Length: 121
Image (tube, rainbow, N blue to C red):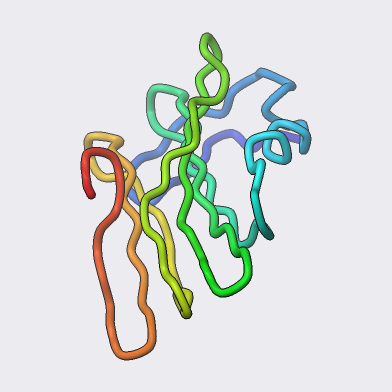
């Protein structure tokens, strides 16, 4: 059952009535990892766009990957937001700012970092 509202870190949005968004296959299809997909983060913005970020681990390389979904265009191509060789983040998360722009924050041994995300390198 879909809740009455979904509260995100910076926005409260009404749920969608689209049953496809309740389907696990929507997320499973989006992850398309090369290695092992881990720790997905999913955020819904006020315009109904789904933002998905996750870690993709292959051997000693971890990558933070991102893509978004809209009802009219489906999933976008996968973007690589960050790559770590020989390590991976201890903790990480993704949030939408007040303009619905996604940002990722993470910490690695001895360091914290913000941000990767739309329009950032």
